[in-house]
Image 1: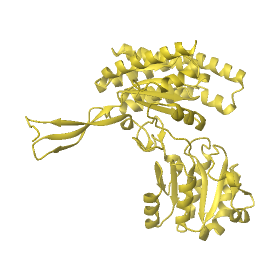
Image 2 (image 1 turned 135 degrees about the horizontal axis):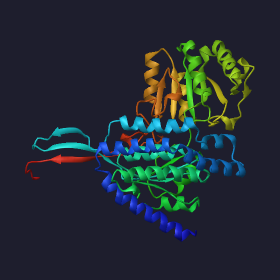
Image 3 (image 1 turned 120 degrees about the vertical axis):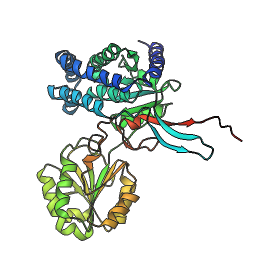
Image 4 (image 1 turned 45 degrees about the vertical axis):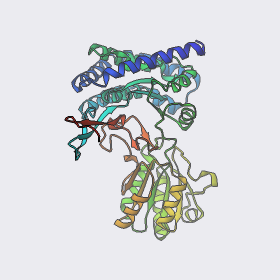
Length: 421
């Protein structure tokens, strides 16, 4: 398939997605939920077929030398299938934001002015590895009234296509145009460039994957992009911290799942508690297998720590490694975060209300925690039910993106014959 053929295929997909989105935007909640329930039922019924296609992807991935971590993310186990289905049922239970009218006010001239939640339109989703994203993204987009064009990684093409087939059949079985869900059928990288050029028919691009992918998408897209490049998350242990609270919070943030974007990458400790606390937390982290990199003061207090190199501060390790720095004050901690943070997640451990409020107000991140693990920056954990990704940009969403973040608001005006004077 040459580039001209790919351009034609992608342009046609986008036009069909736009046409289907017009009908999906006014679809009733009961029908949307019926589609999602049908998808969950069919995934369970067709587990063997799904895993057969997934096995072909895994076999090819091993032949190409994919890493163990990549193969793990690619594998659809029985537990993974159950998780996908449970996620669909959770989305069914979420309130449908489409059509909600908010902030209805009466103007002096009698006009009623409100804001109605409406779908964004057509969303392009570009992602790597995890085939479960195909179902999660499609379900969220559909419930929020959006058509979606899915371009997964080449390593998961067969898995994505079989899941898309189930999704499209469920949509059609409920009398809805199946082009509300489409998967790009080629692994050619030019297909990504073609999708990024459909500014007349695609409203938003959401990339989900490593920094290299996201920077490529941002550099080449002619469509608005919601993204986060890195998850360089920090915890600051304040002088007024409850140190008994601090230890399990820090260990959970770093150790539970070190390869995810809300895992801890930098620990800042106030100098007034460093001498008594750093030996304790370093011993706990080292026992959990964490490689510790620290400033000179940290190394002097912790025999497990190695001196951090200048280019390691602000790193996203996505592994059992952690940078530790002793700071003179909360102000220095916040300055450090402003320099090295990635606007993802920042947390403070303190019993001082004023310091906590200053940290919350001053630190620029999509989620700011007080006495809590960075791992809570997740749509499910924050009450969204599910998420399509985490945005560290501010237009139009900041943080985990759930159903509401997949909609926008338009003005609606109810009059009784008013004219402007």
